[in-house]
Length: 594
Image (cartoon, rainbow, N blue to C red; front, side):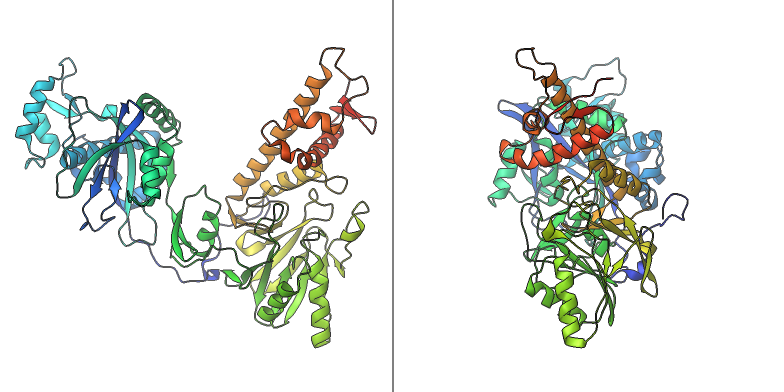
């Protein structure tokens, strides 16, 4: 699984809970955010869709519609760029092809803008000519919303072309995989044409209105302005801008850098309701793992009574120990098949949690694994072992690594069998687990790799939505970052943390963690440097305590959390000492002199 091993292309299809259902191929579509600078700030034009529309009836949207082959031909571009197969593999487009696609979508968006709200964003075909606004008003009257010869041809006959050079790509949405009608939509932005009033076609669109993004979101939250998910997210993104020029320049910059924001959302149930999530939401990867084809089946509510199926051989129970450090609770994973179960991280010794694990497995547990010895992970291992032994007369072995000598007495842990780095266990016929020693959070911390599917049970080494605490002396920041760097170079598809939802894009998440820790380390060092270079009457000859250094290193953290931050800061100082950058006499810290 490390570099040099065969790459895993993804989770094996046969291991998913449901058979694959092919999503409907999306049609290319374009929508344009027509913007203007209002007295109170940025405004965007929105209209209400017909209540009889087949897609998003009654919703407030931006003008737009399906892209036609004629939109490509009007620009002498290849309509084949719009084929479903090409659009599904947009990552393979060259920069030139991306630009061509942008122009096609922009042409379609401006055509739809004219058809739906009668706003005409055009320029003279010959650049030397100037656009006569009075003549344009007359032209609109005679043009008709749907010229029989076609939009581009009608403009051309009047010496005009759509002003696509004034349009910028803002985002790229693909309709959720579970929906029966799907679109590959480019959201574009442009300054609204001066001197023109929007007039809805009263067929597809009604009630055109200029609205500030935050105002639209507020009205939606009160049930007064119905919008669909992509519109809501787009307005949230737009609300960060103050002026039209800011939107246009930032959109242009990101598109040219190949950083156009893209999403194909996924849906799950929260409190019985269908909720949608994008790739940057913490729930997204779990939905992707459980239902890769997008079927709307997965419940995302945190609960403790029932198991959550993730794969055919993989289930999760969450212990009822929610809190600031544990998030929704400790995740216990159950692997295998009926009659041959492996339990990972049974959690804290909470009787009802142990009873639920026993009920699900019917006490047919082959082994119990612990990622490490902390009290929210390992105590239930012994309670589970004892209960099964009492009921069946069988002693289920506990596997893991013994706690280190510096661990507190109440967290001491001695397994029945010690797992060494690289040890491999058979979970069932087609599933094998490999132990990976990952010291840092705890000296005896292990991650477990499900080899065939590239899934890492990451324990507390990587968590979703919670911060990993490195608490010396058993916690070691130097070892923690080294372990992260090792995991970064493994071919992983998903990580299953002990706290929080499934994590996707493991290498990216791990790199983010490494960057975060190293950035904090630089802030710790800078804070100490500032203290050491204070005026002589304020500087300390003996050095500075952890408490002295915390405020400068954690300026972005609430002071109420500085006590907790001091533990991590101490771990950073120990790493800096190991790196030869700081010195301590055991009480205070100073810069190492070379």
